[in-house]
Length: 329
Ligand SMILES: Nc1ncnc2c1ncn2[C@@H]1O[C@H](COP(=O)(O)OP(=O)(O)OP(=O)(O)O)[C@@H](O)[C@H]1O
Image (cartoon, rainbow, N blue to C red; front, side):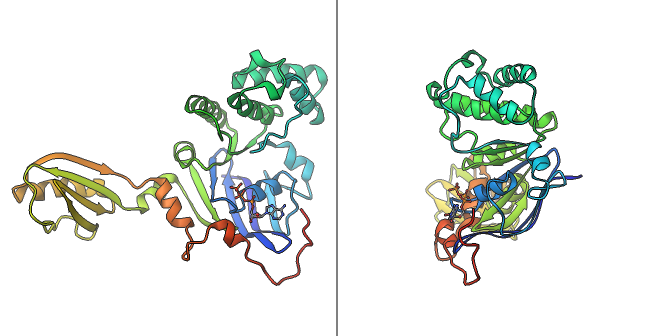
C-alpha cells in the first residue's frame, strides 16, 4: 500500500529545544492513524511541518509523494486540517468563512457556496450557517473546524484533538462523521489525549515521546502486551493464596483479597478455562469470574513514563550543544 505520509529522519529544533529527534514514519493510504504522546512530545510540531506552518530542521516529509517544502502547494492541497486552537475569522457568518476558505484554495465562487452548504450539512450545523463563529456552542465550534477541514475534499484529514472539550454525545457524533469519511477513502491522522478515542477509531497508532517514535502498532497489539487481571470470587476462599499450576509461564502474581483471588497474567483469556478447571479440581466454588484487559491508557502511560519520572515536556527541554537554527519556526 502507498503511503499517505512518508517521513524520514525528521528533525525540528526550536532554539535549544530539540522537538523532533529523527522521526521516521509511514502512514498508509486509507488508514485511520493515531499519533499519541504526552504534552510536549512533538505532535503539533509534526503536524505543523506537514502543513507548512513550521519549517523542518532536517530529514524529509512527503504527503502522497509531494514533498511538504519543495512541492508545498501540491502537498497542502491534499490536506484538510482541523487544528486544536480555534483560528477562525470570528466576524463573518460561518458559511462565508467557508466560502472564503474555498476561494483561497481556488474553488470558483458558485461552487464554493454549494460546497460550504454541503460540508455544513455533513457535520450537522447547516441551520447555523448565518451565525458568527463566536456565537456557536463549544460542540458546534468543533463541528465547524471539521467542516472547514473538509471544504477542499482532502485526501488526508489531519485532526488535532478534534473532540477536545465536547460532551459525550457530540463526541460520538463527531466520531461517526469521521469514521464515514475514512470508510469512503479519506486517510485520517488523529492526535488525541482521549486514549479511548484512539482505541475505538484507529487501525494503527504511533506513540511519540520526547520527539521520538517509541512504538507503532495497532491498539489491539499494544493492549495484548500488557498483563490482564482475572478476579475470581470464591464461595469458600482459602486462608492463603493457593499454588496454581495452570499457565504458570503466563501468571505474574496471585493475590488473595478477602473472597477474591486476583491473578495478574498475560493473555488471561487463553488461561481462563484451564484456571477454572484447576480451581474446581482443588474444590473451590466459583461465584464470579471476571477478566479485565490492560487498557491502552495503561500501556501508553508505561511507554511514555521516563525512568526518573520526568514528564515528556520537561525532557524535551533537554538542550543540545549543536548550532541551532536561531529559533526559526
Ligand atoms: N515555537 C516554539 N518555540 C520554542 N519551543 C517550542 C515551540 N513550539 C513548540 N516548542 C517546544 O517543542 C516541544 C514539542 O512541542 P509540541 O507543541 O509539538 O508538542 P505536543 O506533543 O503537540 O504537545 P501538546 O500535547 O501539549 O499539544 C515542547 O517542548 C515545546 O515546548
